[in-house]
Length: 373
Ligand code: V47
Ligand code: SF4
Image (cartoon, rainbow, N blue to C red; front, top):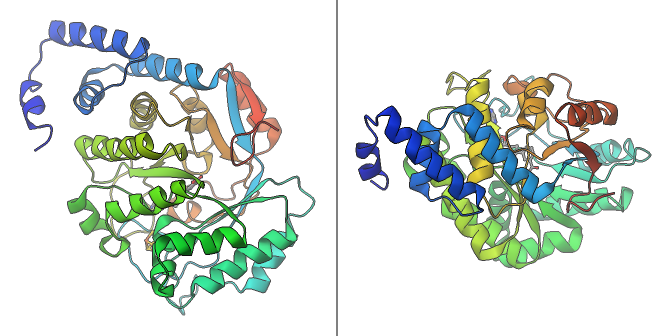
């Protein structure tokens, strides 16, 4: 086991040993050095919350100054019918279920049209892995949305949806992604990463493909010049070692390509799913955010996705390394409300400005590529 020796040596450290080790580690981080996986584990186990906050805040300030980023965005969720059945999913429904939806391109064009005069800069398109739709359906969807909202960036389809639709088309991953880019795809969201550990992934979402497949979609996208995000679903049944392993695999890919613009820790929400695990508490949420900010020294932005945390916890996240809240959303997503998140998610710019001010930050509107607007 990768961390076995370290775990054994840390079983009963004395308070003095902890103090000395933490002091040295804090100095190392504050001087800008990278932490190893073993040091990350030590931080998780031994660092008090205030120290994690201080270190993560230092990293955030070094990378992003006093800026709190947000964008004006909305989501399109084409369907919640899904060929897969992940244990943690509260969103999926079978065909014929009263809560299932399966939008046509025309219906999604109407959704896009309704956003026409709202200064929106990004549409986020993610849904279930539809068993019948093919690559051409998704190409047409992007092209139609782009036609209605030509100045809006299309951030579309998780690596899992992409792998499925492109495999079905018979094209190579590279050519499939190229086809979507030609239609107007500008960026790829971070979903589908879940937790990379092979054994746990096999138990929670066996149909979703391996971690290496997820990473390969993002690697290829980065090589094509696309900017992408990365996520980690945490707070269910995974261990700390599995979380650090997940972050480590992302950091390695980022060293290779530099293509991730944001990392988003996704807090598992426990309503209406087969996993039925208890949720992480707020302190744990803050520790995950801070550790992510400290560990992923090569990822420019850490997003506190407010829809999932709720507004109050998202505001707190700004003191634990997050520099981005995601966007205004305009009540357009149901993935998290169906799992226990914000019911009718909508955030005004005035609310974002108040959240920023209470954390001593300045709200900055950005586009998908983090250009200031
Ligand atoms: O991959 C599913 C997660 C993700 C649950 O890139 C759950 O900007 C919590 O990736 N509890 C999709 N989470 C959403 C996503 C995302 C969201 C916001 C911004 C961006 C971005 C990406 O939702 C899935 C899965 O990890 N999810 N079920 C649940 N019960
Ligand atoms: Fe389908 Fe995504 Fe839900 Fe898994 S998490 S069952 S892939 S909708």
